[in-house]
Amino acid sequence: MPILFHDPILAAGEWGIWRITENEVFLRERVHLFPREHLQINRIKGKERRREFLAARLLLHAMSGRAERAELVKDDDGKPHLEDSLFFVSISHTVGFSAAIAHPRPCGIDVQRMVPRIRGMAHRFVGLEEAAQLQEPYALTQLHLIWAAKEAMYKAYGRRQLDFRQQLLVDLADYTVGRGTTRGRILLDDRSLAFHLEYREYAGYVLVAAVEIA
Image 1 (cartoon, rainbow, N blue to C red):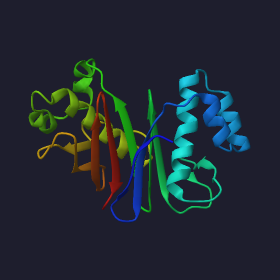
Image 2: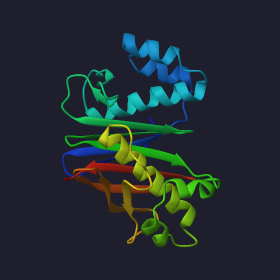
Image 3: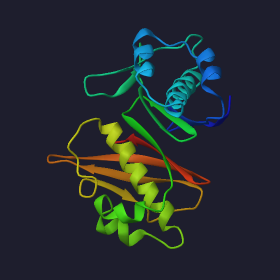
Image 4: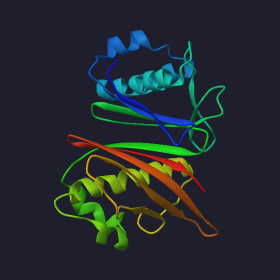
């Protein structure tokens, strides 16, 4: 089971990432799917996407420490959680990786494969303060970290209609290569939400976890 890491985050929470090297048959043999999950996976086209679906659930189960796997279900806002658990959970996957986080506070996670074309999209999600913090030769990685952090905060918030450029903010002033922690905010009409952010970088990929702290 190629779990790259499974670590605590903000005391009571935990997060991890799985590098998917197994084939679909191997994964199916090791994860008990519930009826609703069978319906979900049967609608997924493409073996890579099905492998990501299965690996994310195996990772969450490994992180839970339970003897028997709990079903991953969604609430009315589409936010996932494990059946019979009070923890918030979030999952993410991209080619070759599945990631997960579980925490008693609202949380989100996002893993992104780095691609050069993000530079042409940056004006859609990078604010002026964030743009001023970009440092060459790290700008490509930092753009992906900003995007992944905003996706993670968006998942933690769990509601629609947010402007990624204006309402979601990421502080990379103290950026360190490889891994680190920082802060993020979501600006709402009547209040703002603060987030603890942790990130890790791999060859060609970035991973960011967000936990709401206020």
